[in-house]
Image (cartoon, rainbow, N blue to C red; front, top):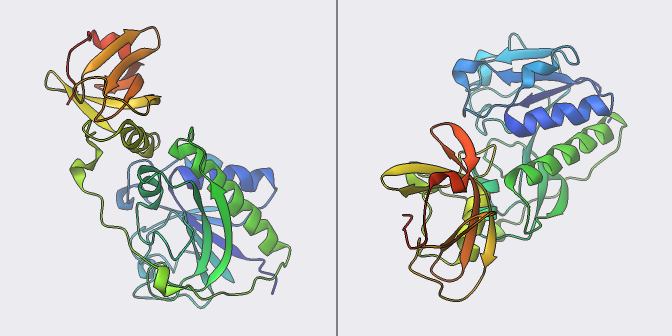
Length: 296
């Protein structure tokens, strides 16, 4: 079946990038984004900047039953970075597909991107599945592996997700058929809810773990944080300086140079290049920190 009236429900950084790629491919599905007072998260992307390119509907982002009367008729709905139980009380008459940033059935639930970066996952992917009333459990419509390079930040991965999703939508418009595949439940697991304080860096961990943790919370997420003299700093950019060896006490500044400040970890060290402090992004050197001082 060739779907012609496609409705995309989307928000966030991925949603903004998705519209960029859809525009590039000259595709014009209907678009719905959550109203500002019902958004699930702050980093919503600039969806409305594409108002001249798409017909965009601002809807209640929590419950489909509160939005269905203002949405256009569609023969397929695709949800990208959208509330997973949006249709729990009221299902539309057309099929509903969801995009999950993982190779389902692995990494079900919210937070899959950050979690995979923190765990150092190398081979991740994208899954488009048909919603069946249970979160991330429906039959797989489309799946593609994505290699997460060790220099990727989350935005790099999200850019790829958006581009692949746009390519999938193009295939749908062109009438390409996909075979549904049941998920292998024996490999399934859900992610725990991310706690508020989970962005604080533990310098007792290895440098590899600390580096993966930092890039898991780079833009457009809230940044990993450390504290120095009672002040909070968010890491905007960092790199792995050395992956092994004991270079100092965890959190100790072991070098300061033109590239930034080097902090020892439980094993190895990381180079902190840029930080955000009080809403301003600056080079880490501007903290006026010296060898031997401790970050916590």
